Length: 115
Length: 109
Image (cartoon, rainbow over all chains, first blue to last red; front, side, top):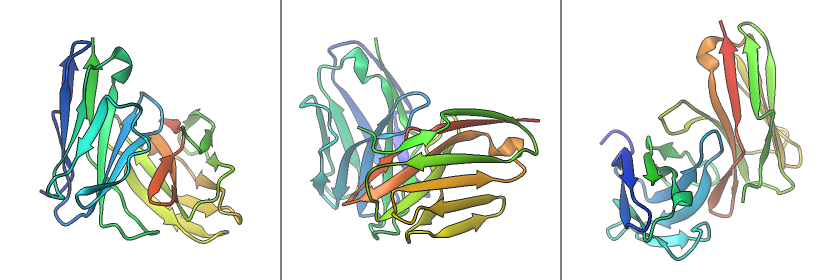
């Protein structure tokens, strides 16, 4: 596609449930980032993929959060045993991986609401 | 953990006024970017500055990277309602981008 696509755009779940959030990056972009954003705040880094491997997962808040990118394209962020504090907008971004002049292209995000 | 502090957090001004947004950190960054985000959308890149002391202009927007590459500013001249949005700075270090706390700008017609 022309841009980064995130699905679903909205997800409502109950406390304790498992959720998966999907990100389709721009074709050819080797780098993929996941961020979490609370209302009116800056995005908080979660994990960064270069190709299929997680180059940096230091932002994942705990072991309930996990992300994969098995073929170096689509990525899935997985959250187990969701808690109300997990409610936020989850943003995905992709880039060509040219440091330091990286250009991140963001999707519109998934609004996760944990009731 | 957000390494970059932005000020002010909220700003409401009249159309035609000038404004400056600041982005400060105690960390050194290899590059710094500014984004604008509108409700329901992801951030959109405005500019990247790489060299300490660098100044870039984008129409009515002027961006400056501090000499020590720890801070940056965004100056908007003659603000317009279309400038309304959440402005975010992001510093690159290692292979990560750390985003600032954000400045929510409202330009009143």
